[in-house]
Image (cartoon, rainbow, N blue to C red; front, side, top):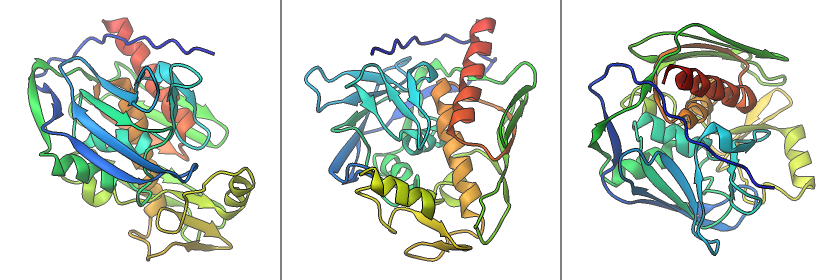
Length: 298
């Protein structure tokens, strides 16, 4: 099965913002969540208009996989992108979330396997690796910016997402609810910017219901999982190695994921998002709708 990936050009808002790439090479090594094997990830600078490309350097032809909605092939337990059966990358949302916060428009994400390191289950390690590489540098070409021309509404099951135009900033107001969670429901409102992201959003760790965890273990997955990398919801409690980083850590992680999934648009988005019980399926659907709207205005 081959997945065709097509980049979409968008009409830009009038903006003096320039595209950005990394100032240097960033690298992170650790254990992959599902396979449990050692994984190394390198993020390197890229020329203008490259976009964000993942590259499987462990495969013979070292294929590139564009981080765009058209390449998303699975959204069940994370966001997976692929261009073929072998050229596939799992769980890209935490990396993309950190790159979104840094306003990185162009880079190559080199991976030596199917999955990136899970690290501590948050986006802090990815944010910090860019910081340690010198942050970002501006390029000559204007950045692609976009806000929807009209409100967007998405709903399915318990999920509701609305996005409204705002030419100035990206704000996410999010409510989430998980049965058995001691603090439920949870709410947080966040305006995306580089300075507040590592304080308010990036530390939020991934989480899993105990019942789902048992099923994943039975399937031979989460071999690299541990309490170092996730919080477990079980019998009215949240189990993790250290105490919760925030009383509402779960909803902050949901916002982290949404920021990552929206980076698939390849644009500097602005707008006001109201999200009720969001997840990867509807996040990616929103990203697709935004790309389609941008293409119509091109």
